[in-house]
Image (cartoon, rainbow, N blue to C red; front, top):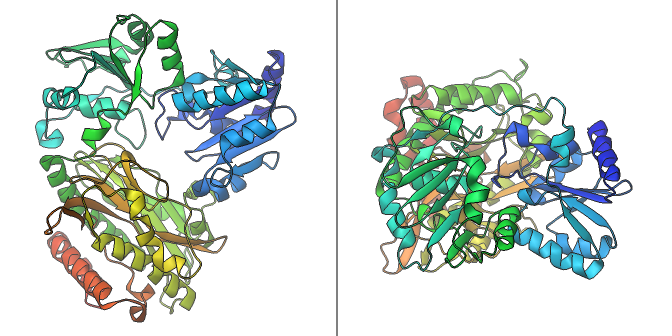
Length: 578
């Protein structure tokens, strides 16, 4: 990695630039990127999904958030000063640190508002910003992985639940726009009812689109179009290389909506062509976040199958001899193998976080970083999920390894996390409630003991799409979008003791109507019991005890008929009343 860094700095000085900036994103601006576009990892060795490197010959800065802070410190060389974006505002840092310099940056890799803010700051501090048109790293990256191209596929109605024509009517209802330009592959895949193989864990095909009421232009790598594809009415498929020209050739007087999460490169391209696009929320996001009846039916069905896989895995794990070289990677592969036995399994929905002992304190730990041996007497945190052809799952459980009595500290802190998890799951809330308004409910029992966790409590989840999906979330960060019926959101409080252990408990919740008029509530989709020997019943209220018992009864009832007698008996013991 040091050699890669030196190569970049050498190129930088050749072009007479002082600083170079690169992020973990690629030109598609998705959370995850394919191997061939992991430029930040190539440069710094950082494998997380949120990071920015700012480098010069003398100074090297790396910015990330609380989820990845420990990971960054472990993966990145000491040459870098690592800055926590929870404590330091990026633009304030730039303003006070860099002035009278030349900065090279690829506008394709950053969202429009980020670059707009950077330009504002640059005008105050005489910072000259230049677009890296040919991408410096691409130019010097030797043995760069090549893109694996596969044909995309269409979803049938039994999976999508709604056709493209119906979705477009909703998008254009009361719309004043002649054209809507979409650059989010997830939104376009949802709208067109297509899926693909361009990301390892998210069933996307990278694409862009221009849509009007009467037609859709879909821009995609033509080698990914299946031969059997019938051109549907109002659909024109063009090669992705033609997108730039098509958007600049739109009528100058037209009213254009441009997704506000767009790359600055496309925004500037349109402005320089005399167009005046309105930066607005992606209209697809506001509809796809509320699952239709068929998507909800599929979510329930595949969470049963996912629960069966989790039961089989944890039953297997409990029977293992931890002195026989069982490690984090081996057990995560076993879980994937069990899930793969389902014929509708498509992929994992993210790299499994399989973390024993101190590795559990790294919030987004990947066992490839360390691969610790599993040891009796330790906590084991497993955060995993799957993409089924019809649904996306995400579940975290923390268990105690071995037959000895767990430490009191493990029990009390696990119980505090569980209390917050339960209280959020039980919540009834009025229409119009936003995620940040209920986040503290999951943190209450930790806060009362001077504890907290450095990540959000809940993220939205797609339907056979991204495991992290907006616009809804539950976190400390203010979110203007309200929680609505049909949304799926995670419930995942945790506690992490640095370099000692980590605890996280996560279920996916469906937002549904409450029996009380004008109110909503949650329905648990995830089906797997909590860790009995880590629960201090004395700390729980009667209502919390009743909730656990009802949930466990539901888990056993839903899963028992799919299990062998031995595993069913094991699950019965795990779900009996506390």
